[in-house]
Image 1 (cartoon, rainbow, N blue to C red):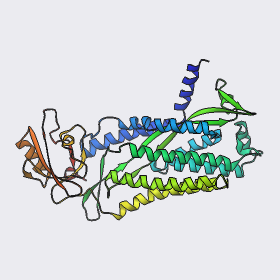
Image 2: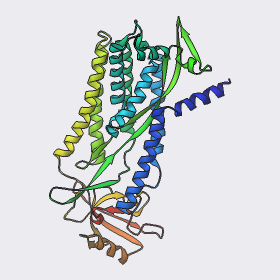
Image 3: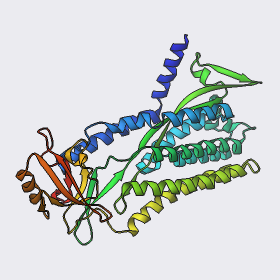
Amino acid sequence: MTLFQNAALALLLFVLQPTFILGIVLTFLSKSRRFKYSRNQLRTVIYKENYEIKRLLTWGLIPGAVLSILSIFIGMPVTIDWIIIYQITTLLLLGLGYRFIHPIFTFSVSGLVMVLLNMFVTDTSLFGEILEQWNSPIVSQTAMTDKSSQVVYLLALLILISTIGVLYKQSLNKYVPRFLKTKRGKLVARFRMTPLWLVPLAVVVPGDTMTALFEWWPVFSIGNDTYSFLLLPVLIGFRYTVQAQMPASAKKAIIKDFIILAIVNGIVFGLTFYIEALSTIGLVILLAGGIYVLYRHRQRERKWAFKFGPDQDGLRVVAVRPNSPADRMAIEVGDVLVESNQHSLSIIEDLTESLFDNRSYSKLKIKRIDGELVMTETPIYEEDAHDLGLVLLEEISY
């Protein structure tokens, strides 16, 4: 086969892996649900583009390239059975909630499953015979459980660090409000953040498993050992809800918690070079730490008051359509419209009447989320939305 054919077949194997297919399915389901919810509850689609698929396929390209170089040149081999267990683990953890498909959970759980299998699966059992046909080290008498855990632990830690970089660089500014009533019967808005992206990670697979499955698969040898490469689609996703903080502030707090988690596990990983058994303990620490990060965010949201509720001074903004008059006026989620064209606002009809009074220009007095009062204005064009491109809390029926 030519180099082009080999590359095409390798890419085909990449897109046929369960985690890649799962990522595509989740993305299109997320878009479909967003469109349906927006039409039914908000009576408008705030974001018409399919930003979910763009995020899925682009956010992980640079981290994937960097991590792949590290994986190959540092020499971090992973076994084919761990790859299979990782794919199964991702599918199973999805059943517990979208928030648990980040590698701090999926890598940690799959690594711990490998440790358990190595402890209890023998080469005389039926499952052991199946694994032996895959050249699995699980049933090997020379299997290095702690060493394998160390590799998985390092990969999970590196992906956590890359997650911090991606969240810091990328904007999570596509806010689609959801609504609930407080115990006092007041309607408030909240925002569910569901970042999801794929990291194409090139990993080194020891043994001749790949060539046993695909004769054309390239291999290389180091001494008496053979290795091959595999492009693994690593699915990175989690979910958190914001209702007592601004979304940007919530993201900063989560990034800070992730940094602390990365530092702690970086120290533990360094100790694994002296005590290899700590790698398994490190996976437990990483898993527990990831759960604690989500728990801390939830506690912050419960401790503080609702930020996106009614305001006595005017109309609360809960969504702004891109390229709309409101967008041009730099109106943000959480702002309160106090006046429109010198008309005080208390109900949605006040805003509608003020816009009819002047259909070519809009001048608004706005109270920012921090209480600052500002004036903003823009001309209104024929193609502009008649409602300025705003979704207001007062116009939602619950």
